[in-house]
Image (cartoon, rainbow, N blue to C red; front, side):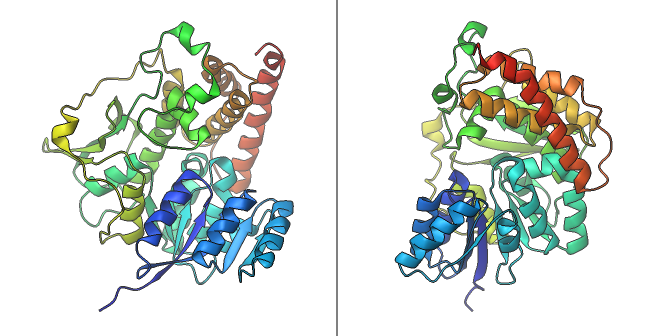
Length: 399
């Protein structure tokens, strides 16, 4: 019996995770069909993807970019229908022809389309960690109400999911689990002294030693904020308390995470540092398919090291852990402040070492509160962005 062909929508198809997803999909035309692709404004790359995969729908959040894409595809006689504007990504996330949605839009920009996919009851492949950080309780409630299937794409959370008991579902506390251990490579500045951090350039911060990622997530990895966001994510995804989640530095990026059980057993998922592994796992779950990832040679790896993170060197991780403990709207404020600070650094308007300081200043003046609906989340996000911008602006002149 042939496998059912699943319709796939990729939100953020022009980014790193989106391109990796297309690579896996292309290996299995008998299992997956690209129904829709979405991005912000990258017309050239999206046009090439639409032509290569004969995509029925394409969406660009930028209306002007959507108009250019439509002209480009019409000139090349592509049958793709182009949708543009603020609701374009939301629309393709809920298309009836779509079974699985890869949510890979970076940052808060991916929140509404992620919620739309969950509300439509899709198989939601969640690579947009910010959606869960900002509105985790709201997203998990929508998933429960709609019957959607939520599968984590972050390599760490996907590793945890693979190590949980059969039948485990995201959002529900798994039986017998004592602790979840998230591994962190430590990024490119793990052993750098403080003076070195003051001179870091955007290109240096984006040169991750093990992974190929987008610029924003690469900077987050360098500050360990990425691990902080994943810490918050883990609590929500797996129904555990913050004191049941531990971060360990693992320089080799071979063990992607571990689960400790009450009987003393510890299960780990290992693999080469390649995002196609978690993508292939989630696309085909509960089956397994080839991903194109090279087999792991343990003899060549030789040894695996683990150490505790230095929270004085990486205060962003501690700030995220505090936000996880506080809950409510605090994680949304943390994420917003971080996005503004990272953007300023990448644009040359903020010193790398100042990123955590900006976030800490914003968090010190944020009241928090409980999440009642999406408006609460968006209001907290907007407030934190405004405060972060006001802190950075006077310093931009001297950066």
